[in-house]
Length: 167
Image 1: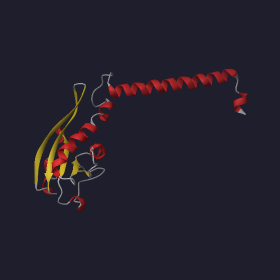
Image 2: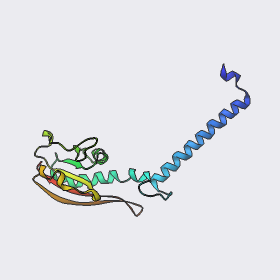
Image 3: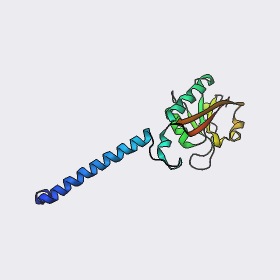
Image 4: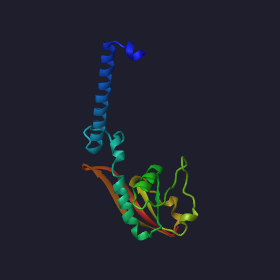
């Protein structure tokens, strides 16, 4: 049996290694959690991963407020698959959510009988606004405001909302 043949010094080394790994793991996890809550490592926005986790619940609430007068069967449109999935999760009532545009991954928004005649809220990052892509699918479009996601005084990202009527 290998455990019986282990020398006291080998057993001590194994125990110390396990404890060191446990302490390192706990410190590393605590550091990551602290960075998410209150960033203390100054990093460029594109490299600082904690920014990606911040503000989605707030954006979902903003979307729900803007959808309130579009009817209970209104759906969401976004320009990127990440935002589509996050809004499908974080928007109260979990409305149908679709990604529009792009040739990779999920492709373009296609007509769907489930949303025919319904209204939509289009959520798009401010620097990526492109209303022409699905303009012909709706009777009319109207701006519905902008939402800025801020953390500790820093702009993380900014979104524009557009109400789209009668798909």
